[in-house]
Structure formats: C-alpha cells, structure tokens
Image 1: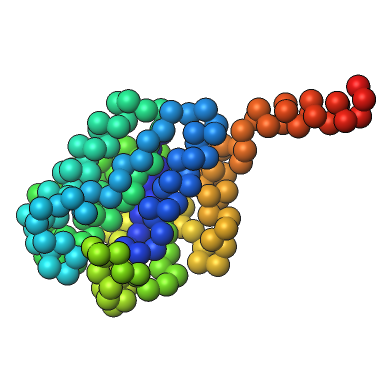
Image 2: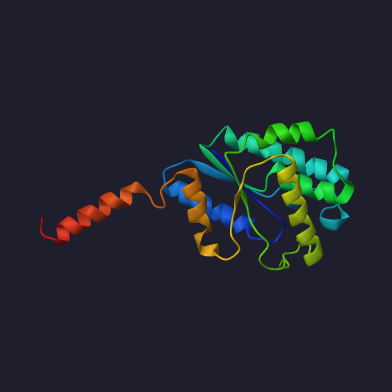
Length: 194
C-alpha cells in the first residue's frame, strides 16, 4: 500500500504523513514515511529551480519509494512524482522525455490525497514564502492531475480534523484498532460484574 499526500508547499502534507503513519502502525501494519526529498537537493529549489534540480528530486523520490516499498507493508509519501513534476513544469514547461516515467509511476500509488491551500506558507528555513508561487504550484498540480487522468481524494478546506478519517475511509480501513473493541468489551464486562 502506497499513499501520497500531494499539494503545494506549506499546506500540511508532512504533518498528515506522520498522522496517517501513526494510524497505520496502530492497525498493526509495518509502515514508514518517504520524507520530502527536495530539502536534500544539492541544486536550487523553489522559484530558483531548474530542470536538473527537479530531475534529481523526481528520480530521488522514485528511488526512495522503491527502497521503502520493498521493506514495509505500507508507505506514506510526502509528495508524489506528479507534484514534484509540477515545480519543473512551473519553471521550464512540460518535458516529453519524463512523462512516460511519470505516467507509469503514478500507477504505483494506492491513493493520492490532494491537500488544499488553506493558509499562506510559514517560514521554515527552506520553504518559499510567496503566496502567488504557492497558488501557482497548486494550480499546476491540478492541471497535471487532470491531464494525466489521475484519480485522487481531494480534502475539503474546512474539515481539517476529519482529513485522516477521510483517508482511512477511502482505503477501507478502520478508524481505530480492532483490538480496542476487545479491550473495551472486557472492561465493560468487568464493570458489570460478569
């Protein structure tokens, strides 16, 4: 199982990745998170990015996903190849030579979860602070999802507290470990004197 939270920078994907990973772990799945690779890129990123930098990010993302998918039942990705590609498209336009890889690789995700822009990006030492840039990337991601015909779960901008439940529901997974029901039933029987 491979779930990717996608969207522009500063929308809360990283937090959601770790929240979902914790839920999956409580469901007794072995799980790890593919952390955002752009932060490790040795080349310019954000508005200063170029084709070489985004190619490095794209291929590193694929390599990390391969590595973790071989070791865990579930991986949660902080981005997917399509939203990494959106930064390249924004900087240099679509690249015909990369799109066959993208189209193939997008088929490896169990679920894409689109996180909406609900606030401006906050400063973290790496993230670009431009609201216009954030919105442009968000728009480019939506265009690419539509161009590639990619299904996704689009989270609503109002119900942040219900986002993880929506993801678990789409995956057909319970909201809490089934073991809790057993413990709760046993506790109720003890309290009832049975």
